[in-house]
Length: 256
Image (cartoon, rainbow, N blue to C red; front, side, top):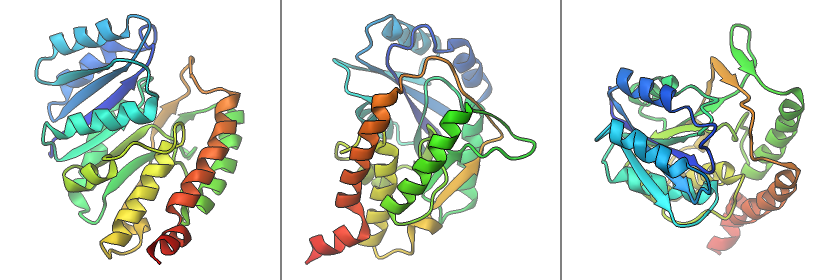
């Protein structure tokens, strides 16, 4: 199978990061490497990440940011670092491991088998036979948000905010992550907008044919989320900025 390098951004995760699960995954799966980004943590996160790297030489890189930059910038810098390993695929995963790491190979197989795809992302769809454990309030907020996000992007999408994504490395990823994101919490939305803009610039078919939402067989809400009420308010402002910068109508205006 093709090689993947996945970024895990971490901020004050010393009590929550399951180093044992990460280690077990690395022992079982030889085609995946990790870039663990410490985003200016104030607890013992960096020491924990360095211990993981020492136990798995060549499989784990640690990138320490001098101060807290936010998830978007931590992921961006981690991806740029990951590209230096020259993998076939690069992506990012949330540190709470709400989406099991064991699904990374499944994402990679999809990219192997379907060359038209540029990005595979997890979707928390509560189907029969799937173990999706999510607070009801967050589910309903997510459904309203998904409708708004689809309007912002100009194409339908079910779940942009699931922190499990894998895409093709190389020039595409370099372009997508070259510049800092406008958005913070909603940078995943901006990433999809960048994919759409990149395809339009290359004269390629609709972005919908290049994205794949993978219905997760398992996902669980992990206590300790750093998302609060103010983040939802900021998200509205961020989505407006993304709409103004990336929506197809805005791109046409900029081309005049």
